[in-house]
Length: 276
Image (tube, rainbow, N blue to C red; front, top):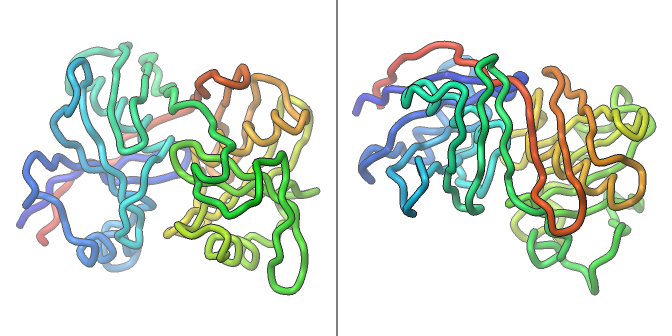
Protein backbone atom coordinates (compact mmCIF):
# COMPACT_ATOMS: atom_id res chain seq x y z
CA UNK A 1 0.00 0.00 0.00
CA UNK A 2 1.26 3.49 -0.84
CA UNK A 3 0.72 6.12 1.85
CA UNK A 4 0.67 9.74 0.63
CA UNK A 5 1.44 12.17 3.45
CA UNK A 6 2.27 15.76 4.31
CA UNK A 7 5.08 16.37 6.79
CA UNK A 8 4.27 19.32 9.08
CA UNK A 9 5.39 20.80 12.37
CA UNK A 10 4.23 23.26 15.00
CA UNK A 11 7.14 24.82 16.90
CA UNK A 12 9.21 21.71 16.18
CA UNK A 13 6.52 19.22 17.25
CA UNK A 14 6.41 17.22 14.01
CA UNK A 15 3.78 15.12 12.28
CA UNK A 16 2.77 13.26 9.20
CA UNK A 17 -0.78 14.01 8.09
CA UNK A 18 -2.58 11.67 5.70
CA UNK A 19 -6.06 10.87 4.42
CA UNK A 20 -7.73 7.71 5.70
CA UNK A 21 -11.13 7.68 4.04
CA UNK A 22 -11.27 3.87 4.22
CA UNK A 23 -10.38 1.54 7.12
CA UNK A 24 -7.76 -0.23 4.99
CA UNK A 25 -5.99 3.11 4.41
CA UNK A 26 -4.82 3.20 8.02
CA UNK A 27 -1.31 1.85 8.74
CA UNK A 28 -0.92 -0.75 11.46
CA UNK A 29 0.76 0.11 14.76
CA UNK A 30 3.87 -1.74 13.59
CA UNK A 31 3.94 0.24 10.35
CA UNK A 32 3.51 3.53 12.23
CA UNK A 33 6.42 2.69 14.52
CA UNK A 34 8.59 1.99 11.47
CA UNK A 35 7.54 5.25 9.80
CA UNK A 36 8.24 7.20 13.01
CA UNK A 37 11.87 6.05 13.12
CA UNK A 38 14.06 9.09 12.39
CA UNK A 39 16.88 7.03 10.85
CA UNK A 40 15.05 4.42 8.80
CA UNK A 41 11.58 5.96 8.37
CA UNK A 42 10.11 9.43 7.92
CA UNK A 43 10.38 10.53 11.52
CA UNK A 44 7.57 12.15 13.53
CA UNK A 45 6.16 12.64 17.01
CA UNK A 46 2.58 11.90 15.94
CA UNK A 47 0.71 10.68 12.87
CA UNK A 48 -2.61 12.39 12.10
CA UNK A 49 -5.20 10.47 10.08
CA UNK A 50 -7.91 12.57 8.39
CA UNK A 51 -11.30 10.94 8.00
CA UNK A 52 -14.57 12.26 6.54
CA UNK A 53 -16.68 14.31 9.00
CA UNK A 54 -18.74 12.28 11.45
CA UNK A 55 -20.94 15.18 12.62
CA UNK A 56 -22.85 17.76 10.59
CA UNK A 57 -21.19 21.16 10.42
CA UNK A 58 -17.65 19.83 10.91
CA UNK A 59 -14.91 19.91 8.30
CA UNK A 60 -12.97 16.79 9.27
CA UNK A 61 -12.56 14.03 11.83
CA UNK A 62 -8.92 13.47 12.78
CA UNK A 63 -7.27 10.65 14.71
CA UNK A 64 -3.95 10.87 16.54
CA UNK A 65 -1.31 8.15 16.77
CA UNK A 66 1.88 8.47 18.79
CA UNK A 67 5.30 7.41 17.55
CA UNK A 68 4.89 4.10 19.39
CA UNK A 69 1.86 3.30 17.20
CA UNK A 70 -0.72 3.77 19.95
CA UNK A 71 -3.81 5.88 19.36
CA UNK A 72 -4.39 8.79 21.76
CA UNK A 73 -7.18 11.27 22.32
CA UNK A 74 -5.79 14.67 21.37
CA UNK A 75 -2.83 16.67 20.09
CA UNK A 76 -2.91 20.47 20.26
CA UNK A 77 -0.12 21.26 17.80
CA UNK A 78 -1.39 18.47 15.56
CA UNK A 79 -4.84 20.05 15.54
CA UNK A 80 -3.28 23.34 14.51
CA UNK A 81 -1.44 21.64 11.65
CA UNK A 82 -4.66 19.94 10.50
CA UNK A 83 -6.37 23.33 10.44
CA UNK A 84 -3.51 24.84 8.43
CA UNK A 85 -3.74 21.98 5.93
CA UNK A 86 -7.52 22.39 5.64
CA UNK A 87 -7.13 26.13 5.03
CA UNK A 88 -5.00 25.41 1.98
CA UNK A 89 -7.18 22.60 0.67
CA UNK A 90 -10.45 24.47 1.09
CA UNK A 91 -9.14 27.87 0.04
CA UNK A 92 -10.14 29.51 3.34
CA UNK A 93 -7.08 31.45 4.40
CA UNK A 94 -7.62 33.13 6.77
CA UNK A 95 -10.55 31.04 7.91
CA UNK A 96 -12.39 29.27 10.68
CA UNK A 97 -13.00 25.55 10.98
CA UNK A 98 -14.88 23.17 13.21
CA UNK A 99 -13.02 19.90 13.56
CA UNK A 100 -13.88 16.68 15.36
CA UNK A 101 -11.69 14.25 17.28
CA UNK A 102 -11.80 11.51 19.89
CA UNK A 103 -11.56 14.26 22.54
CA UNK A 104 -14.48 16.20 21.06
CA UNK A 105 -15.01 19.26 18.90
CA UNK A 106 -12.16 21.66 18.20
CA UNK A 107 -12.60 25.20 16.89
CA UNK A 108 -9.74 26.51 14.76
CA UNK A 109 -8.75 29.86 13.28
CA UNK A 110 -6.04 30.51 10.69
CA UNK A 111 -4.67 34.00 10.12
CA UNK A 112 -2.77 33.65 6.86
CA UNK A 113 0.69 34.16 8.39
CA UNK A 114 1.20 30.53 9.43
CA UNK A 115 -0.28 31.33 12.84
CA UNK A 116 -3.11 29.01 13.87
CA UNK A 117 -5.27 29.01 17.00
CA UNK A 118 -7.38 26.15 18.35
CA UNK A 119 -9.84 25.90 21.22
CA UNK A 120 -9.30 22.36 22.42
CA UNK A 121 -11.92 22.08 25.12
CA UNK A 122 -12.38 22.94 28.79
CA UNK A 123 -9.66 21.79 31.21
CA UNK A 124 -10.99 19.02 33.43
CA UNK A 125 -9.41 18.60 36.87
CA UNK A 126 -11.54 15.62 37.91
CA UNK A 127 -9.02 12.81 38.50
CA UNK A 128 -11.30 10.29 36.81
CA UNK A 129 -11.11 12.27 33.56
CA UNK A 130 -7.40 11.55 33.07
CA UNK A 131 -7.71 8.89 34.64
CA UNK A 132 -5.67 9.40 37.82
CA UNK A 133 -6.11 7.52 41.08
CA UNK A 134 -6.87 9.97 43.89
CA UNK A 135 -9.23 10.07 46.87
CA UNK A 136 -10.63 13.42 45.75
CA UNK A 137 -9.93 16.31 43.39
CA UNK A 138 -7.20 18.64 44.65
CA UNK A 139 -5.02 21.47 43.33
CA UNK A 140 -1.91 19.33 43.91
CA UNK A 141 -1.05 15.72 44.67
CA UNK A 142 1.90 13.99 46.32
CA UNK A 143 3.33 11.25 44.12
CA UNK A 144 5.86 8.65 45.22
CA UNK A 145 8.51 8.19 42.51
CA UNK A 146 11.73 6.21 42.91
CA UNK A 147 11.63 6.44 46.69
CA UNK A 148 11.03 10.19 46.75
CA UNK A 149 7.88 12.34 46.98
CA UNK A 150 7.16 14.91 44.29
CA UNK A 151 4.24 17.32 43.91
CA UNK A 152 2.19 17.37 40.71
CA UNK A 153 -0.90 19.01 39.31
CA UNK A 154 -3.16 16.81 37.18
CA UNK A 155 -5.52 17.88 34.40
CA UNK A 156 -7.16 16.52 31.28
CA UNK A 157 -6.98 18.58 28.09
CA UNK A 158 -8.78 15.82 26.24
CA UNK A 159 -5.70 13.78 27.15
CA UNK A 160 -3.94 13.34 30.52
CA UNK A 161 -1.26 15.67 31.89
CA UNK A 162 0.84 15.71 35.04
CA UNK A 163 2.57 19.05 35.69
CA UNK A 164 5.61 19.56 37.92
CA UNK A 165 6.85 23.04 38.80
CA UNK A 166 10.64 23.31 38.60
CA UNK A 167 13.10 26.10 39.33
CA UNK A 168 14.72 25.73 35.90
CA UNK A 169 13.67 23.66 32.90
CA UNK A 170 17.31 23.56 31.81
CA UNK A 171 18.13 21.51 34.92
CA UNK A 172 14.87 19.56 35.15
CA UNK A 173 15.28 15.74 35.34
CA UNK A 174 13.06 15.16 32.30
CA UNK A 175 14.85 12.00 31.19
CA UNK A 176 14.52 10.41 34.63
CA UNK A 177 11.20 11.64 35.98
CA UNK A 178 9.36 11.82 32.65
CA UNK A 179 9.16 8.05 32.04
CA UNK A 180 8.68 7.33 35.75
CA UNK A 181 5.65 9.60 36.05
CA UNK A 182 4.29 8.62 32.62
CA UNK A 183 4.14 4.96 33.69
CA UNK A 184 3.20 5.51 37.34
CA UNK A 185 0.60 3.06 38.65
CA UNK A 186 -1.72 5.96 39.58
CA UNK A 187 -2.04 6.81 35.87
CA UNK A 188 -3.61 3.60 34.51
CA UNK A 189 -3.64 4.94 30.93
CA UNK A 190 -0.20 6.60 31.39
CA UNK A 191 0.21 10.37 31.14
CA UNK A 192 2.08 13.23 29.53
CA UNK A 193 4.47 14.96 31.92
CA UNK A 194 5.19 18.70 31.87
CA UNK A 195 8.09 20.44 33.63
CA UNK A 196 7.04 24.05 34.23
CA UNK A 197 9.28 27.00 35.06
CA UNK A 198 7.37 30.18 35.94
CA UNK A 199 9.34 33.23 34.78
CA UNK A 200 6.55 35.77 35.39
CA UNK A 201 2.77 35.52 35.66
CA UNK A 202 2.52 35.86 31.88
CA UNK A 203 5.67 34.00 30.78
CA UNK A 204 6.74 30.41 31.39
CA UNK A 205 9.25 27.89 30.11
CA UNK A 206 8.19 24.30 29.54
CA UNK A 207 9.60 20.90 28.65
CA UNK A 208 7.28 17.96 28.06
CA UNK A 209 7.82 14.22 28.11
CA UNK A 210 5.01 12.94 25.90
CA UNK A 211 3.30 9.64 26.54
CA UNK A 212 4.44 7.08 23.98
CA UNK A 213 6.96 9.47 22.40
CA UNK A 214 9.48 10.87 24.89
CA UNK A 215 10.54 14.49 25.14
CA UNK A 216 9.39 16.58 22.19
CA UNK A 217 10.35 20.06 21.04
CA UNK A 218 6.82 21.28 21.73
CA UNK A 219 3.55 19.90 23.07
CA UNK A 220 0.39 21.92 22.53
CA UNK A 221 -1.86 20.16 25.01
CA UNK A 222 1.12 20.12 27.39
CA UNK A 223 1.34 23.92 27.15
CA UNK A 224 -2.39 24.15 27.84
CA UNK A 225 -2.19 21.72 30.74
CA UNK A 226 0.72 23.57 32.32
CA UNK A 227 -1.06 26.93 32.07
CA UNK A 228 -4.31 25.49 33.39
CA UNK A 229 -2.56 24.01 36.43
CA UNK A 230 -0.51 27.19 36.94
CA UNK A 231 -3.56 29.41 36.67
CA UNK A 232 -5.51 27.28 39.11
CA UNK A 233 -2.64 27.50 41.59
CA UNK A 234 -2.64 31.30 41.28
CA UNK A 235 0.76 31.48 39.57
CA UNK A 236 -0.37 32.69 36.14
CA UNK A 237 -2.59 35.20 34.35
CA UNK A 238 -5.16 34.45 31.66
CA UNK A 239 -2.75 34.98 28.75
CA UNK A 240 0.64 33.30 28.90
CA UNK A 241 3.61 33.04 26.54
CA UNK A 242 4.99 29.50 26.70
CA UNK A 243 8.59 29.00 25.59
CA UNK A 244 9.29 25.42 24.53
CA UNK A 245 12.50 24.00 23.02
CA UNK A 246 11.07 24.47 19.50
CA UNK A 247 9.86 28.06 19.86
CA UNK A 248 7.01 29.96 21.47
CA UNK A 249 3.35 29.09 21.90
CA UNK A 250 0.59 31.26 23.38
CA UNK A 251 -2.12 29.98 25.70
CA UNK A 252 -5.24 31.84 26.82
CA UNK A 253 -7.60 30.54 29.48
CA UNK A 254 -10.18 32.79 31.12
CA UNK A 255 -10.91 30.29 33.86
CA UNK A 256 -13.30 27.59 35.05
CA UNK A 257 -15.89 26.52 32.51
CA UNK A 258 -14.17 28.33 29.61
CA UNK A 259 -12.36 26.70 26.68
CA UNK A 260 -8.59 26.96 26.54
CA UNK A 261 -6.99 28.44 23.40
CA UNK A 262 -3.62 27.46 21.96
CA UNK A 263 -1.90 29.62 19.32
CA UNK A 264 1.36 29.33 17.44
CA UNK A 265 3.03 28.58 14.11
CA UNK A 266 2.14 25.69 11.81
CA UNK A 267 4.31 24.89 8.82
CA UNK A 268 4.41 22.39 5.97
CA UNK A 269 7.84 20.81 5.50
CA UNK A 270 7.29 18.59 2.46
CA UNK A 271 4.91 16.15 0.81
CA UNK A 272 5.78 12.58 -0.05
CA UNK A 273 4.72 8.97 -0.07
CA UNK A 274 5.86 5.77 1.60
CA UNK A 275 5.37 2.15 0.56
CA UNK A 276 3.85 0.08 3.38
